[in-house]
Length: 67
Image (cartoon, rainbow, N blue to C red; front, top):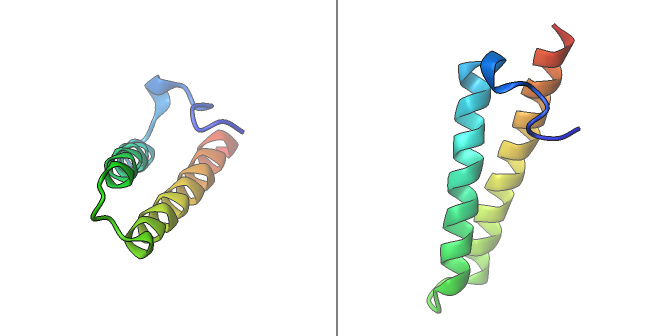
């Protein structure tokens, strides 16, 4: 299932918020990878956060489709 399965017109605020957070984390990870001062630990924590958001987003979208 894609993260964009639910139509934009029916997106609830929780799904929209999770999408925005996922996008922000993607950008933060990209910027952190470019920085020489970023530690591997910090980068791995960002990636874990992004994965957790992605999993929550997928669950919310499955629930929205099932309604």
